Length: 146
Image (cartoon, rainbow, N blue to C red):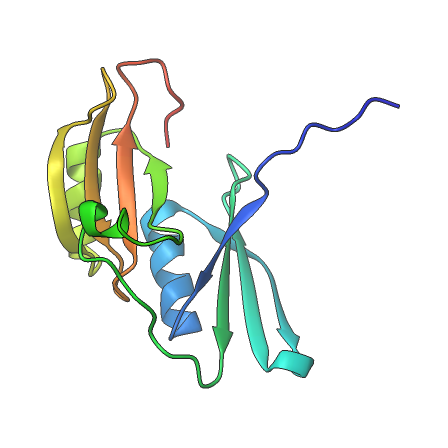
């Protein structure tokens, strides 16, 4: 039997408002709820989101009594923290996507511009809870579209 090559399965994001975060990420990026569960032993509620076309997954977690952690204001500040700094999505039509996310309650962090990676455009927003979200448009380099 061939050995399976490890792949990224999902990213977990701890949130203050599970329902609001689920609604925002579903509306913003086309996710749908795959499952919801409760882990009574740790008073933890979990909602797993999946993108129906791509299969990528985002796990939203909420535990009663959780407190906001360090949240970087921008990518440069995030690079000073030894932790996950942001989540990134490859999108088509970067400029309209950026504007749409602002209309959904995101905060502009870095307006659309060329990325240091040749042929790629990028932008950053903060989701309604302040988590950094990078938007990448690789359409000129043959990357996958949203």
